[in-house]
Length: 175
Image (tube, helix red, strand yellow):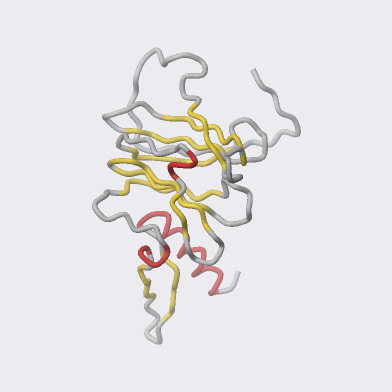
């Protein structure tokens, strides 16, 4: 892996932690400078405290899309592949208003598209969204809240983060 690749990888890691960053330029002094492009990219959320992010290609177009959890409505941004993002939260149905503190994309039902899990703090239960695919009137991807599909939880617990791990065994079993 060359220096440019490492810097780009580091840029993505940092972007997932503190915000969207597009340019990493080593200076002659060896310092790295980051340029804040959240406004230009269309993902600035003034007045909101963003708690966590998840990068994932929920619409299978080859571009990493962005989900932001906030102290307020969460947001899903579709990546156009040109450095701009469009807020598709309403169309997708994933604007949970609770205080989101963690999120992760993963393929819950092994259908090839990414589903979404959101960890909420004090004002709400966690939410599991199943990606129904391009079922919107304009071909947009729509999510369904399947949190209580198996019934309400027997007790509430608090969490501050989540991750999604996929283990490929060559077959899929559903119960």
